[in-house]
Length: 259
Figure 1 (cartoon, rainbow, N blue to C red):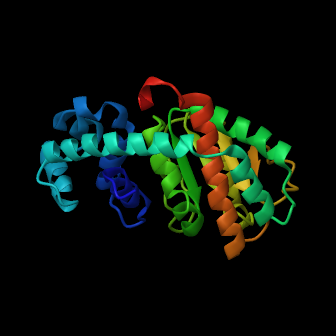
Figure 2 (cartoon, rainbow, N blue to C red):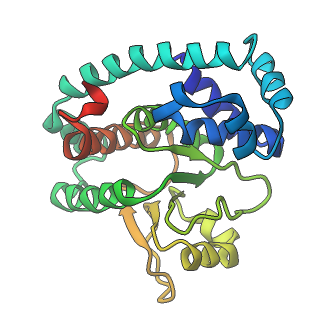
């Protein structure tokens, strides 16, 4: 990692980031595929600020100006594009699935998992952007997934939780991924959880919890474990590895974005 995208995603995931800075970063991520053509004035307009604010932001992350940021973004993109293509090509589907099965003590329904991965990535592919919401540690384990998905042309970022779930974007075509290994997050924020499901039809719930609430009918991606111990954290990393590989194979491979 260690790219400009990594720095920007770290800023997005920080609960103390101010709203203006967060919007600047969001607009940079949304413009990533055509960033070389983006002008400072356009970024300022889209971020509801002025060009002086854009240049101050660039200096806070150690760059001289917006021109410097553009140069770093373009050069970083070329390196990461080649790395991603290489990593995906040497990934063997069976190896990843076998690791998940081994780490879950053979409680893993492989066919169901692949079927839900198909649904998961179809929703992601059709969505305007993807926002991940969850507790701090599960979100942190998705950082490499976020960066690689952005390289594959899909804007993915997190919205940090302070005291409660919040509506992440005013975009009904966005995909919302709600992550809670145990389901406690949804129990603590039940009203807002239901509101998000109603407002964003492309919501995916990633959890090992078995819901009994008949009012809850989102798109589920069932995690093959319950609880949040160290072993399950390792499983989750492998699951995110599989999901990005699956997305690459079905929607990106051999396309112009990675030529």
